[in-house]
Image (cartoon, rainbow over all chains, first blue to last red; front, side, top):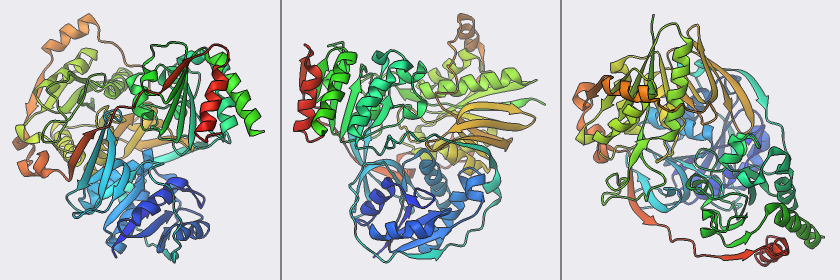
Length: 320
Length: 261
């Protein structure tokens, strides 16, 4: 069976969930070969094998952290040359998409980004995408070269399928472009202890109606009662009430959780673009005419400062 | 020596309009008004600020697109860019991201540049891959997804806010930069700017000017193919209740029914 390269997103060997989803999808089109760059391959290998990696190609070098994107492209290209895969799958993070983009140019292959589903087809993998603010769904394929496809988080439920997962060192020679952009300083983001926004099963977002940074704890309390991630609309982010990394929408992150709760968000097209594929949508807004109510499975027309705390309290009671 | 800044912009269908696909499964541009991609306005703004800080700089705005795409160029010119280059050719219809990056790279080499600036993604395709592809094709550093950018002493520096960390980046010119919507509000064109834009030069280039064969671009030359496009069924209207004191509890009941609690 053909091999499929899967680029591993991890933090020091702790494999992030979107990679397990990728391994699950990769098995539909071939045998997954994981590419793990940086430290922690031995730790990661067990998880990668559990989810179906027949092999784990690994390389570690200071270049991966010291320079932007290109050293990882050099390594993925080396893996591509070592394996001659039927497809290359990369998680749809900002960096993942850039790595995939440069690899596609180098190997002369077509690229599809932000796939939400993947299946085997007669002429290679077929990717489903959600476009135009999720109002259309398309099926596309790569027609030249080896398909390079980035896949959005929450596109598949990770399924275990134990495989060998033997770790092999990958020889990488870094090109002259790899040291072009130096990372001169890195400030890690402080952990909130909440799930990562794009990966979370539940997202609770606040918008203009939250009316100030000092009120966001109301949203956070609801999120914490559900074990959810916190999102924010562009209006709330632009007003400086919540960090940009939490922005849901066209210019922020697109999320597709099991449950999306929008509080004080009117539902402008830019916001809808980022959350419309959520499985269940709930909104709380004072304005009965807000467009978000056109999307909801359940909506409450009311003051979020009354409804949200009551909801949080009720959830706590029910959860005991 | 003058700093040559080229801003790559895209003319996109208005996201608030009713966007759909044409019969050949390319984006239907006939029925929807187009405009300069909002995310590219941030690129124009940063280019203007970089030019203002430089001793001597010239801003060229570059687009690949149909006749109407001139509107996007005019908008950028009215904001303050100096001149424009429009790559226009019937054979470009249906070109995908890889093809677009090829055309832009050739056009950049044709025009000459020290600094290429673009938005983080287009507001239609939204792939966010073209800046990285350009850097790869041009063989220059990519300094992308910046929320802050500065050019000094032949170097570009900037801040990239990622999920896990915020990074401070540095690269020597020439380089490709992309900026996010956090880089700073884009200015509105003044009346004077709008009038001045009408007199600014717009150079037209076609594929033969760039030494690109027709079969390298367009629908036929694309590296990808859309086989199907279906409108998603509209979400059926759910329950909407008015809060009369029990709204939070009612919502909790709904969530419990859906097994979220």
